[in-house]
Length: 135
Image (cartoon, rainbow, N blue to C red; front, top):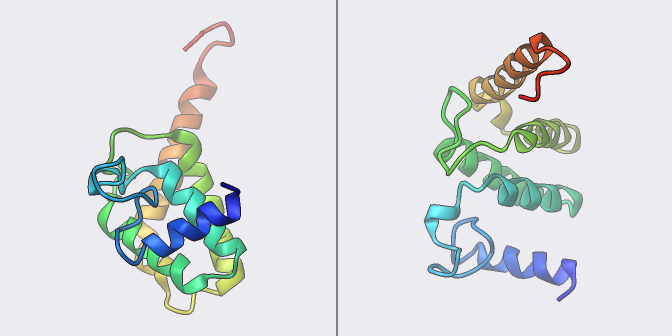
């Protein structure tokens, strides 16, 4: 299956299932997987690139309403640091492409600031490590 048809299939299945992996429930598509950061960033990137801004808006609102806590914790199995950064990049792209007419970024600003703050804190800790420290 090529990538456009795979993403198209996922898009159609959003009508039946929440944004998991574009698969039916009980096949790694159950609601326990909805908070998977990889799925969020891949889906959002595709919707933005394809100009599907209303779907992108719905995905962002769903994710930040139900899966992100104010302290930057994702209510899923564990953080993927690179995906926090990718999410912030996609939020900038979302604003650039849509101008955010529903003020969705303001609605979720506290959580987005939490992402940025957490990443900056981790960077400061890493900068204090000795260069020969493997951690």
